[in-house]
Length: 344
Image (spheres, rainbow, N blue to C red):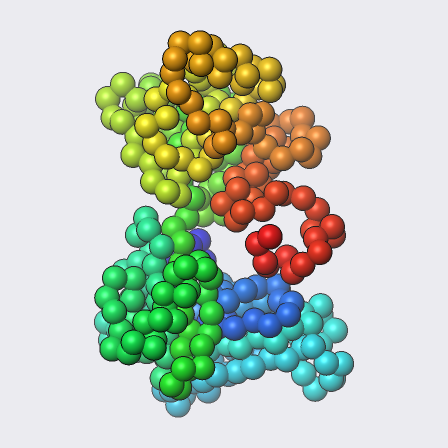
């Protein structure tokens, strides 16, 4: 969502100036590619752009194709095949080794242009389904509304079930995109180790909420987070894409917060401290007859990277949360037996 928000921001900045623009979107990837389906770049008529569709090897050629799309005022489909050792192909020798389909759409001033559709769904806290015609670039939000075709509805239902975007060849071809909300952090803590965690989360576009008395939160933390929530006045409202991190460094506070969080069905609750501390908390709650779901409690939180500093620990925590939501175990990519983009 960070890339989408940046594109929307640039579009909003320029749309009243008469600047001509085109949106390039990766709509299909076969074999290897640095970016996956849904990667985007907004290209302006002066040759500048924001976002990206590869690691840098395709952007230059896509810029030229975008100028053509803007001039003709029509959508352009481009296929980059870097699987063969063909010197005439863009990207060969740069490590792509895949087939990448890109749809380039000139941006009109109509409310139905693809960026206006993105504006509708960007803040939605449930997954969205976007349908884009590969023939004319017309986009629509199909999250709730059905299309006019039963066959197309079946393809959309498949994308919903698999939670994975895909290009289909039905009719003149469509890109059906599955867009998930960004992850929302509820951090129960206000100490200095929250700072690197907030910096990393902010940099990747996650929402950060600090749950603490505002008067006790430093100005540095205030400047990094989206909200500071006073737990004594305002209850938290997490959703399916929210996580809770217990970082108060106080045993009783963490235990009380863990009890409170049981009323929310969170995928990830992280606890700082050794495993023995976590087990002591859980055993005490069990003795008190307080039911606690253990499967979503990660303590000590973070991947086993040997991290020691607050900055290194923050990286391991963020990485574990990402792996959790992707259904991965956080192992080494070199040890995978299947594609890095297939959830095992």
